[in-house]
Length: 335
Image (cartoon, rainbow, N blue to C red; front, side, top):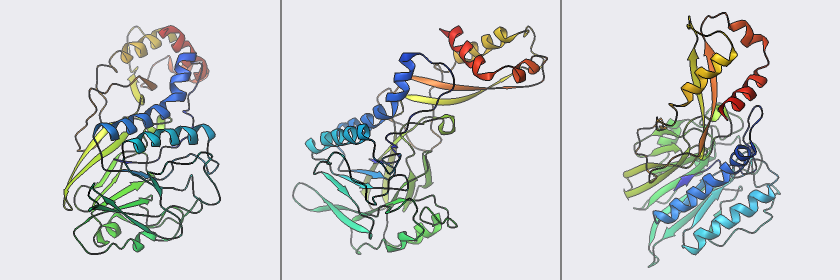
């Protein structure tokens, strides 16, 4: 499994009054998403899990997040599933330490240099090689990907890297997709930093971002998850997307252009409620040419931002009224 950008300790951002039940659901959703990743690793009997940076949202580790994270990784330890971690710009290694010790199945790749580790089968035969390097500070301006130089053999080489894929960046490992493709003998670039699931290259070398497991605000809308990756050979890679986000952020547009019968805010809220009924009838998709698996996955709920467009006399009321009050009134009307 390829994941990353867990951002433990980062709250979801909402506007207006929400119920206690919804508040708890939002607070717990990031943790539930990680639980889904761990359960998937066990269910699909994976050989290892890669976590590619920004495990925590801040250099100062969240105590709750660190305890939770350690407990979840212990589940994988009991299943003899190794975990490889690099830290990113939000949680550089620096002088920070974990409050709770991570279990023995976890390998944290350091910040001093690129590290290489082999994953072996039950007989001790190497199956794959993992390469990676963590951030030592909140920015990494060196082209560290150039130091990913595995031996030339028949092993699958997987490179973990936290980068924005911006060759002009001075902060997040400057490099371009073409530079990664030109790096010899790397078959899969397991990236972190971009929060949308993205397939940069679907051929060897595969270059992919799994995205954040749970969106935190409307800027991280849509279905979120992780990748299940299978190698049958270094050049034959099959990828599937596993949904993990209990809560999905959405943006919906409602046109009020020449809308008949629209006389006041109550009528507008009725339109929004009517529009909301179709949300659960439309399965959330992921913008990837990649199969989605997840045993009938259904989100717990959606956080929706409606954008009202078009010319109508009610426009002046929308502009002058407090939109926070409108949102709160809509919640009351839905309840």
